[in-house]
Length: 315
Image (cartoon, rainbow, N blue to C red; front, side, top):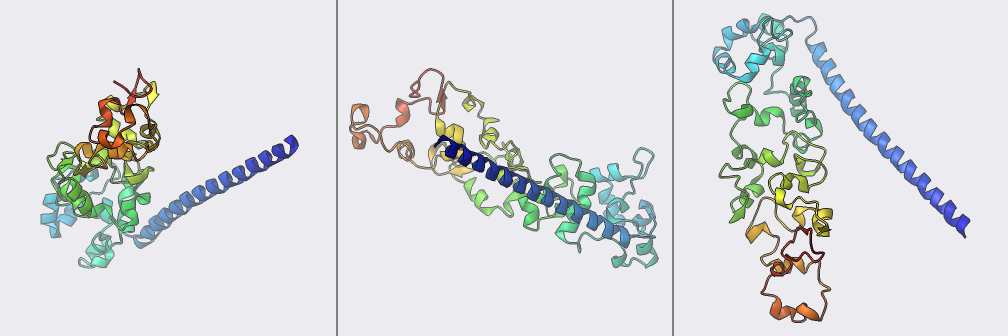
């Protein structure tokens, strides 16, 4: 009997190892495909610009003077300006590519990289040739935004914006242009103060993508993003409230806003508690639960997030 159990255990380990190797292979293949796609795109751009020469920003200004004056005030201008301090930078041509064929063609629009006609993927890949080194931007190609056809220029205006990060409009207006449901949540009576400017969408979410769900600015442990502000709930506690530890803050709270106090999922605290604690004892302080229902569980169980002194989370 013991030998049979041992064999079953060995088979289970073998199956687990095969699954792990297969998943690792899929991840490696996905990264390889992404790198290959990036390489092919760069190669295609290189073939399109083969034989072309850089003409300099001053040449661009002769036709695009108004756009140049706006671009001159942006942060991109300082980092792409042709100078000894920024070797390899070519001003406008750092993003649009060598412009000799464009100039020789009398301003032929097909002879230059145009962001207005490029696909979202082409735009993002071109931006990432510089921004991929940034830890907060390098995951953009795997982000939910990219998967839904949102490119860098959907939110950023390189030439015309004077706002922070070259945004087309300020947060949260820019985010709400797509996320209407979240906008409605932030207008509820109990909410995070996003509309008042006390907190921004990017304080919790990384719009450029993360390896966590909902593009949260944190580790895979969802509650970490909440605990940046609500540090008194962090613990560790001697006696944990298990749902808080295992499922996170959203097991009880709406993250954006709610019609319920404390942004709870239910109007009454007891209704929320009874979703898990349905098998409460029929004797003792809970013997008249219907009459007791109007009172709050946290009258007694005050340390609802965890306690260092009582396993029942009493005060």
